[in-house]
Length: 340
Image 1 (cartoon, rainbow, N blue to C red):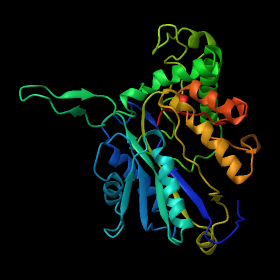
Image 2 (cartoon, helix red, strand yellow; image 1 turned 90 degrees about the vertical axis):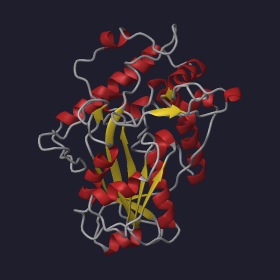
Image 3 (spheres, rainbow, N blue to C red; image 1 turned 60 degrees about the vertical axis):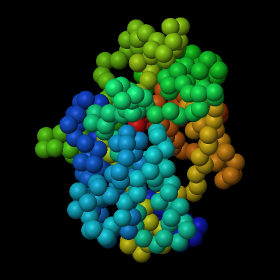
């Protein structure tokens, strides 16, 4: 939209992303910094948008400053700083939130913010051996909560959510299937995907994850993964993916001065924590809180995008927000495209 409350309102004027490849798929040998550099290079094609800072979310690289590394690989000037943040699955969104907060605080420059992950090339993680002749203790994920408060894997937490909020297997399968259908419908449409950046010379501008031929019968054949009598399956859960996405942010005043005629205003954000046993509902709780702060109801929003890690988590959050699941992710979500 092209109206704004004041000149310091943060706005998003452009977005760029790679197609998303599944883990050990298209980009199995491409490290995260290379994926990031591709979308950062694409941003350079937007006139008069040389950034004064680049903020990037990343959860899997395990150290360093991938924002700075990626921007230098993209050919940005040495004077451009980079900031990397990690809030796990919401890292990319929080990077955008941080850039918007900088602008709202008076930063009248151009910011590039987003996220990157390469699940295919992420470093191995290990704890030091407890004895001199011991072996490193390799682990897949870091600890998220103290043992006394419970620290379940996210899949187990999704089972807890399904049980606590009464999310049936049928609802989960139906929602996941619709995610694939919508993603494929977008792929088959005539819509020009100006946000997508090609990776390699022969890569089509499509995502690798959406699956053709999925049917309700197919979904019903997946076994529960995290509990013998559970409802969370490989079919209604996300698959790990590789890719990068960034947004270009600036103040409304600068956007108008540069001649942009379309942008998205940043009105506000809420971040919240919940019991680790039901971690997947935090987005729904945050959305309700934000609605109270900004005096709107989630069901009044024309477009609602929700990060799909597990169908159970999304459906419970939709129930918390008081919206039908059909309103979410009209072009498909991570259940089809891949996560994060």
